Amino acid sequence: GAGVSQSPRYKVAKRGQDVALRCDPISGHVSLFWYQQALGQGPEFLTYFQNEAQLDKSGLPSDRFFAERPEGSVSTLKIQRTQQEDSAVYLCASSSYSGGTEAFFGQGTRLTVV
Amino acid sequence: DQQVKQNSPSLSVQEGRISILNCDYTNSMFDYFLWYKKYPAEGPTFLISISSIKDKNEDGRFTVFLNKSAKHLSLHIVPSQPGDSAVYFCAASAVGSGGGADGLTFGKGTHLIIQP
Image (tube, rainbow over all chains, first blue to last red; front, top):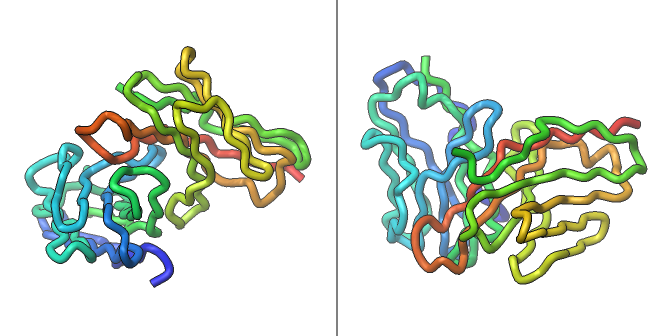
């Protein structure tokens, strides 16, 4: 596709439920990033893939968060046993470079945990 | 501790005038800086960037200035247009550090409002 695509756009989950958020990066982009944006805040880095390798997961807030990119293209961010503090917009970005420069962002998935 | 700070949550500027958005950073390892623009319900869109080897980069109506000694950068938009109304995020990266996070560190954003 022409841009980074994320699905679903909106997700409401009951506390304790598991969720999976999908990201389709721009075709051919090597780097893929996940960010979490809380209300009134800037995006905060969660994790980074270079192709299928997860090179940095230092931003994942807890072991309930898990991300994968098994074939170096589509990525899934999974949150287990969701908590209210997980409510945020989850942004995916991809870049043709091996760093974070000039990354292209998707529209995000707004997760609300009730 | 915020490594990238945008101290003005909002800024109102008259159409046709210059908009100046400011950003400060604390991490001296940052060597690449970007500005992103965000409309409601959309993801951030890349606007302009600057490497730490430069002190100015210009692209049409947008100019970014970097003062490394002060750890300060600013985005100038001139002339400001109604379509420029959006949230602007300053972001930084330690591209040349060779390790650690390759992601961007963002500020909290400044909501720019262009008054007609």
